[in-house]
Length: 604
Image 1 (cartoon, helix red, strand yellow):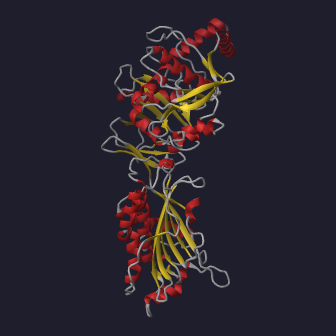
Image 2 (cartoon, helix red, strand yellow):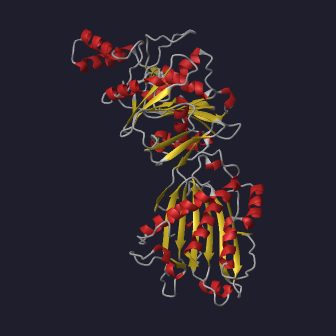
Image 3 (cartoon, one colour):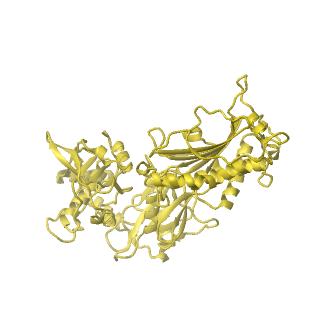
């Protein structure tokens, strides 16, 4: 059972709402057995009161679809009732939160958790700025539009919500007046003047309000982009890191609003709300951080130095500045947005780099490990039909072709190898197969293996791996026969790594079904490795030069190596020509980092 807010959110994101059962309602969690009936004005008041109370109280989560039972004057989450998604208008909930809570709380996340029939809805209200008070229209007690000339302040107290008494509101107002250092009447006049100055008609917030240091800059940007028809501020401006942002909306329903976004070092931009929501949604599965902190903010096209507009019908937006690094949002013909990383390289190796190597000591291993951090991957499983299909495809796979290529290029007529299960167990959570070409004495000479593993308690991502191994140098030489070169050319290494990467990225993931609609919880990566793992009698590992002709890379200023590796941050699915080009760039980056400082793409 979870014990804190972080654990509650983690359980909900992992699609395990049942983990919340037995938890007591507290300062940071509230349970509702059924959805808010938003056709009823009282339910609307309750929704905005609950959200604003958490915003005022340090954050929390509302879980809808779990019934409670009383226990010693407290409410305990007892059983899952479930909510029918068709009965909930999530967009209306978002709109009401933006319109009825002043200022609109930042980073509110609305999502679903659990399997069909036991799905729950949750509203995650993160902690807000400590110097901000959130108010809602005072309850009217009868149907009708909310009054704009009254406010109430909901507060969270333990497992309940109460209205801040008038006396305490008066004390807060008095403290604000005293802070201005002027008589009450003059202070109130000054507050009113400041609130309406340069704000135009109406009594709403002005452009830049809430960020006094950036207010002038935001007003200038707003005026520069006025031709886009931005409407009026929907709430106070807010900060995301060093960026300044503000929601804008139109008075007329049916017209999408905008988000004004100022990123240091970039021209100002306004983003249509549908596109902005897609950006936020793409990053919402990032564990332990806000969506925008993960995915970043819109980045202008190269050469853009004037204010720019991302309209609702845009189909591609670059984003950067978040922990995920540079990426691109693209919209399909069906209107589905998806984030993918822009290709780049690093030397970081994840925990899965040596998956499945326990007990193995091949003379040379050429490996591609693809890390697929899909959101909600805990719900995936490997079905028998998909496993059977993989068994049929493996003999015709790219990695199988690479094994054949290595023997045929040396004139050897080696028998075709059969793909068999193992050496690791197959289950609903993992699948593995290997094929072995034996030497003249029956020992393994050349081997290929593939494996896909779903997340475990030790590894949070889906891992797909493809290996080609020279098990033993002498057995490999004996299998080829006398006179044949056993050392691999660097072009052969490229071909093998390309085939291993393609198999791990394209073929193996299909074993869990259609993955096109899955979202990322972190950037996907591919790790390419060349390793010598069979020590000599003295325990020293041989160097790569014994098995691979590294001459095309030039001289080595770093000394002999028994292993080299590089990581590619890129979308796993791509065309073969693009994959081949990216592979060459990655190998040059790897070579330079490991001492081959003169390596060039046109030589590799």
